[in-house]
Length: 113
Length: 115
Image 1 (cartoon, rainbow over the protein chains, first blue to last red):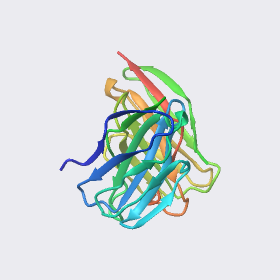
Image 2: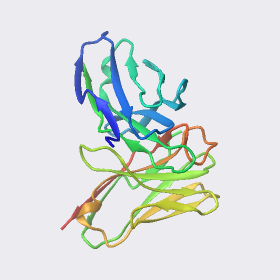
Image 3: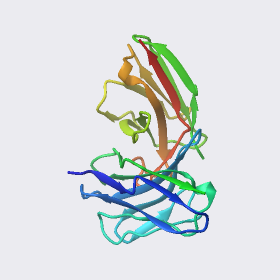
Image 4: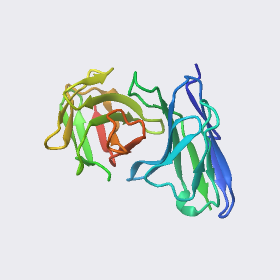
């Protein structure tokens, strides 16, 4: 199993550009989440999904969209990048009911200039 | 609302003990603990559930006081491998113990173990 994979690892965007951060898991996990991590702020929840076709907002959803058309994939879209979105983005997944452990991907480091 | 962690940072020598605290302003059904090493992704340590159940796969102990809405992580006889940043998390929606709706994390406690 590859676990949770994220692409790209690094990305530089200009203000106003849009892009999609990819996240995929091969563990057949029902639950998936996106977090951003900024120095001194910990991990903050952006969006989450409890299954294909079901998504909802977390703590800091503004400026981001998500969709979940399959169990495996949970892409995060930046609609119009802003310098305040410079951060490290982590995707996580976990199995429903039988386990509470979240498995995190390796992260995407995004810089918006 | 983010749980509050204390202390913000701890420096220990190998073999010493440490306690990391996590408190919340809202009722807790569970507390989740993760450790993150520099440049890596967070890794699950354990979960403490209302009613006293604990699940984890590390030799780390913790407590959960539901009335005080607090949890503490106890690191005894610390090893160099314990270094990293420790995060506590609580279910975002507050209703589910497992956090199906993601977790709200504290700002972290930096732990440095010196030889």
